[in-house]
Length: 253
Image (cartoon, rainbow, N blue to C red; front, side, top):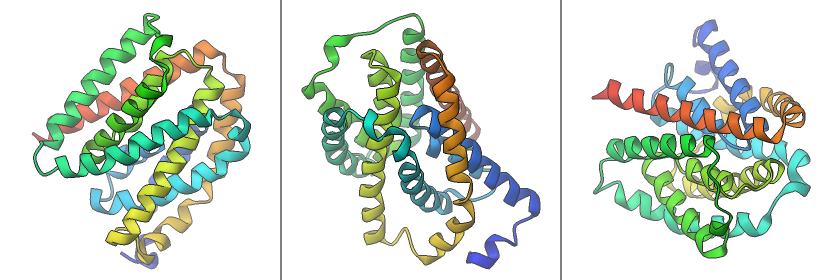
């Protein structure tokens, strides 16, 4: 599908794709993550999965750039770099394991674990002791492996940050910076294997316009929210995305 064919979708389909990206941008601007999960949930009604991933990959890199003015001085770079090392190690492992493990079963397991820990965190659970370099790298490896297997790598990182009771402003900034690095890493890899090409870029162009608007609105919501409100919204979002994932798996059985 080339640039012109993209617009040969029905008006409703085009509007729905733009609206999905807009909502995903607001979520990313507020949470610091969740853009890909939201887009995949919406795009999957219109486009096949193999065509969705490269578009979202480019949009992820761009939306991270749009977020930097809001988060640049609110990033824990020690946390980000330790996790990025782990993710870089774990991602190839996840891709390798795709040959031997059932991706759907792993996806289902991750969703159930995320729901369990999200409910646990809603009950007030926290643990400052896990906030050390060794566990940061291990969390990154787990995240990278799961990302290679199921594209759900962001969930373990978000849960890890929430468990440590780090301030929301640092959570959001660090998540956005981390995913910028991982998206650049994935983008470079995708260029080598030919997943991203000029057709992908053409199809992405009309979607870019809503990114800065959504991030701006998401940032305004974040500024107005209290710390406890932020945590609850992030946890509810994790549960929602997990439930959607479970329902999609059940539907495919």
